[in-house]
Image (cartoon, rainbow, N blue to C red; front, side, top):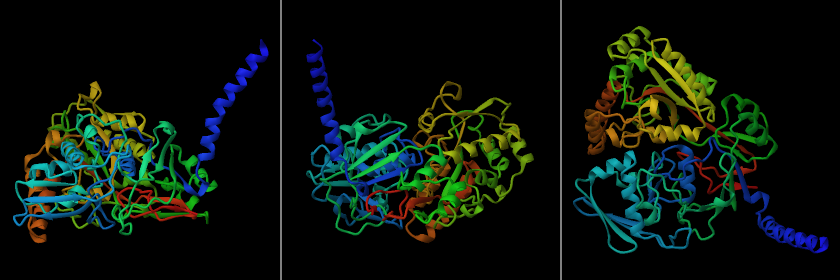
Length: 529
């Protein structure tokens, strides 16, 4: 009886090993696999439901947008082959380029496009602004659709190519028609990579395979625009929360790219001749302390002003990013160094004024209630700056309770509008790319459209009126006037406390090339020799 059982066991083992062997043989050559240590684990798969960077990086791997920003943040056609506007500038007609199809083999049609844009308009800062101008959208046929406006808006292509906030990716109609407040969990796009769900291991590994059916544009790659030519067969994100582990992996060649190296380890890795440390963005990132405007004390602008007077940007930036080579003080909501980088109205916040902060806090009616600051050490600079926030605010009378969790849990909690003692929150520290924050149209934090605003839900009709004046401005001179008026108002009502800005380099092995300048790291055009 034992022999038959043994034979059966061997047969079962062979049957089990054969698929494994086949899979092993199917693995691409080492120089066709790009291994990356990203800054965070991937938790949310829907780039319309979440504005966090890791989800946008994921979204740009598998989805596409109608337009795309080049390295100078100028919009260029991507899924669109051609477009035109009517003489009165109220009707835009778009025709999709040939060869677009989803990963399941179905063609991309204008029904998918319209459903996707409608969903995005309900979630995103830019999308919400475009929705205010939109009269309606209609399909002419499977490849052509019209966007009808209530009043002219020259920034339509810029909005449709957005790579910040919640991005206007084109999904299948069935996915896009789902509840916009609930993340889509399917991952069927039309982009240059396919999400490998079978090999996805939360907290450990995320895998993307080259889409063999993808047809890139003919233009050279430039930022997000141009031909998205994939030069590797597979991209693996290896989750390494510990910076020392990631640094060691880069030096030994276990990984090819470290997307956001810890600043305190940069001198060590840069001394290795096989490693290059470079910048991939032309604009610095902005750091912010975001209050929840729905509940006391931060429903009162005086408590929010107290945040500005209680905090020293240098304390946060030094804790988060080390050497001052990588950071600078800046009170511009729209980023110093950008075309909109004015600091007008914020002159009083250049240095802390603790007495003024205490007085404003008292006038706000705050009586020492516990305030919940949610944060994570998964992204080390954010965790360190959260501790600085707690220490700084306690000096003027804020009772701050810092609660740490994994980054996925923190970003999920940020969307919770409940009371802080019922799953909500009062404060968090985060940062966003310069591309996101450099314009009143794209800056997610200065959107003060109440329930349509980003997490924190600030509400100020005057700020929204002034933001609209900037968007409507017919020329640069009037746009500058509108910008300064808006910035003065923001300084008064403080949708968030600007904590300065920093440059985030990336590190790569010397045999890796082709990383593009863009709002987030991209993996098409990247080559490994």
